[in-house]
Length: 286
Image (cartoon, rainbow, N blue to C red; front, side):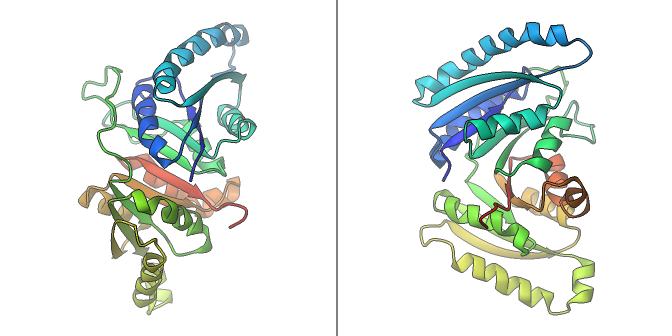
């Protein structure tokens, strides 16, 4: 399944819940963990270099409980003006096959949950990316969040548009399904799709049943759902109504133009999910 996870960290309230998620992901096969922080080079480059060693010492402290749990841990601090690009370069250097990031809104009334680095990673990654969604404290004091209370695979909602671009998520679900207790397979039928293809409800249901039939016999309880509406809005509604522990969704592309035109659903879901999201790009060999 997975062997090496790159965990992107900063000294924010998102760090403790993100680190706590590593224990859950170890059941996915993770043996090696790279704890990485990129110091952003700004107007004061000397300050960035001065803080590098402080971040390394902090990451070493973060690594101690993971090492005690039997994981092989490496810490990595880099300095760059392009944080997301540098994190992806670190992932390639250490041959990571999973990215783990945490993100937290600045307040409960904030319309933008994801930071710029998280958005860039979601857009550019060619690796599966696990987003730990951290709810802000009521008073928004910046205090540390709590550890995740549910295993990610307790109740998985896989949202698919049944295109070739969703095959990354569908293939990943097959690998994870034997550990999942419940699985919901969801396709959203858009007004345009229904107008262009009147038989779409029947076709979508048949396609979802095909995906279900190809899951291993050991997979958890599987439900097939078709809903009408806007994709991101409907995915979020179903995830909330069914109290899903994880949303699994495919990603169309990594290019700027492609992601702006057809790859926005994954970002919109991540922005407002209120639960972890696993973004699965289409891999080259798929």
